[in-house]
Length: 348
Image 1 (tube, rainbow, N blue to C red):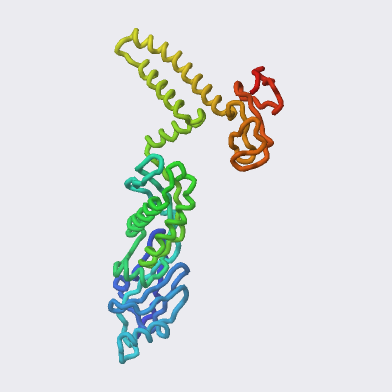
Image 2 (cartoon, rainbow, N blue to C red):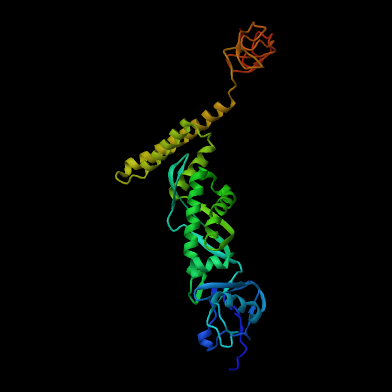
């Protein structure tokens, strides 16, 4: 029986195929001792005989008579020199990098924020992966199917990523205010924690990008309000006065009594002006008022209050070279001055 020459190869024209099973039945041919194998770059070929992996071939051209038949002979303990074709399966595995695989949190991640309490966080980005161990990948995932595409595994990989991201957020205890500034750190943390999971199925996570981390709209609004109040010094009295101003503004919108609404509108305008004037006055006074101790002195070394006539600090014993302040206006005065040069008050 004359044996034909068969070259086993896969010309991949797709962009999403991970595994391709060579169609022996469709071609009506089987492997024989005149067959050759061509494996292109970014590919490997896995030979399976009766469900058992015989060998894995990387890129190159192979003569199966010398490269695969001795292995099959050992597996099958055949007595003949393969004068007849051999029935086996050949799987081509795509080992190139699959990039720009989009991921996102289908449901928000619950995290405990040190300032806002429990909030919901969403994130999205992209990742890249490739087959790192074809043997493990065959055993753990694609089995004996004739074709395996990225769509068949991407959902599973996304679930793994979101799970790792959830753990990273919980362990980091980063505030919602600082999420945007820590995306690169989260990239590395998640990548390290999830790599072992990828290795278990024969894959490698080559890149991970967290493009954005977002919080609910009500939290964003609270952050905006906090930024606005930061201009006023973020003091308690400022918060109360701004809240009062907002309440007056809402009352002015009351349509139940037009005259009352008009009166409230006028009052609100005047009241809000006074409230903000008081707020700025209070904030400026707080920032500009110097510290005084009733016309006495303070130690330049430890800051303790000392008697005007003292020559040494009673707290630290430092010889005093201290400053004096007017008890009326707080202006710094000369130690020997009898009257304040700013307000004219007689000094003690």
